[in-house]
Image 1 (cartoon, one colour):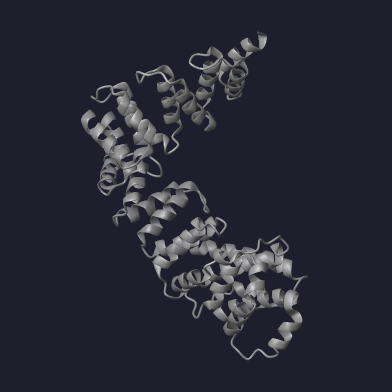
Image 2 (cartoon, one colour):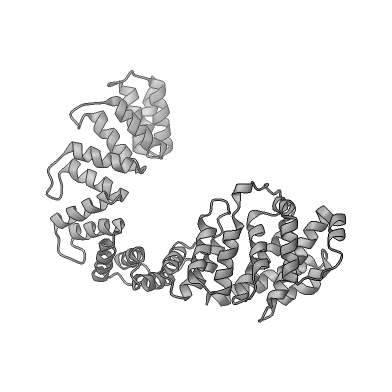
Length: 428
């Protein structure tokens, strides 16, 4: 299904390019429609790349090029690689990193198992060459590019039909700091690997469909991919599959199946699944209500580093819920754990605990610190509390201007009490 979509998209892009090149380059105008053939030859693709490189070199090294290459006795592939190697420094300054890598990848292929996918990459190069070549290009530093690794992965993905290499290419386009984030490229490679049953790719692709990243959002497709990966033992996919049963996304709500998959994910170390199991035990969803089990699963999730569980565990100790005694010190411990992961509510609650003296010692400076952390993350109530602290001057020197600043910020965020306080201070 995706392959057909990609092939259709390729044809549309090629037709747009044909209109563009008719007045710019006669060779491409005569040959570009060869890319629409059902069986595109690798030689055809490499000729396209060769022409692009030749055109780039003519602009920068025309006289030198004619002397060095009076005859083209080598194969097209050998010619492309020779030019890339001989003029590497100049080409790296003239070509964006993504395009540079794709040229090397295609030039290095010796056989073609996936023509549609490679044509997609050739079109990238042609679109840049004809439509975006005049854009300013940032010069690459020597340590910014490891194209040899990418060539090897590409060759394995295309020539050897290696799903692990295809998956790694998908990750490369989604995560590599030196490459612009290219979700459609990630989808292409994840699709190839997922079609071969590669669980990591099925999970990653499920995330893309669930969020609508690089593809049209589809809960149904995401569910199908998560299910395939989960049935192979992929714990994170099992957790996401359980979430979909839990929330009724792409499938009717089913708490029994949700719990079954959450149990599996939790047993395999997924902290988020442990947290959701805590909710299910606490509320009796898909199982009987069990406060003790709820607390234990929340605690295990928190100890595994899940920030929501850390915050919730802090609240449990602060309020003395789920059969636990109130323990401010334990509450502070878990709130601070959550705060290290920038949990905004943890920032606020720490500010509240210290500013009100719930810990047995009132520390306004700590309260201000944590309220400011929450305020900087957009918490409107924290802005209001900062306004109160500076307005009242309790434990800190009264500062009306500072109070007005925080009331104003809270008022702009829609806090009615802040608006009223600001009006009162403006009248004084």
